[in-house]
Amino acid sequence: MTTLTLTYCSRCDVFDRHMTDDCTRLALHWSADLAGLMANNGVHSRLQLAHRLEPLGVARSTVYRGLDDEWRGTPSLILIAAMCRAFGVAPGDVVVAR
Image 1 (cartoon, one colour):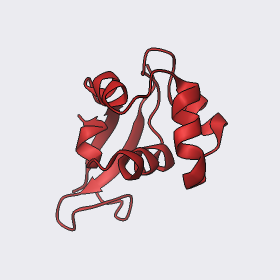
Image 2 (cartoon, helix red, strand yellow):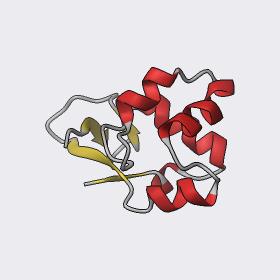
Image 3 (spheres, one colour):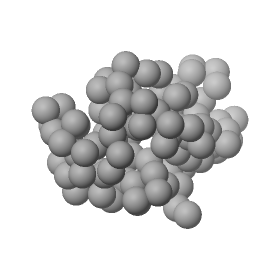
C-alpha cells in the first residue's frame, strides 16, 4: 500500500509549510471506516463516488487513482477535501495520520 507523506508542523498546526528538523513526518491512510461512510451515503463503487464528486470538479481519474475497489489506495488532498465536502464530514472521518 502506498501512502501520502506530509510534513506537519505541530508548532504552527499546518502541513507542508515548514521543513525543519522539528517537524514530524506523518503518513495519511484511508480510514478503516471508509467503506461504512461510503455505504451510509449510498456510494457502493468508485464509479458512484466519481459521479458524486464530479459536480465538485473532481475527475474520475482522481477517484480511480486514489482508491481501489476495496476502498484502499493513496489519499490525495483533492480527493480528501472533496469527500469531506460531499459527505459533510471532517478529514479525520476520511483519513488517519500515523
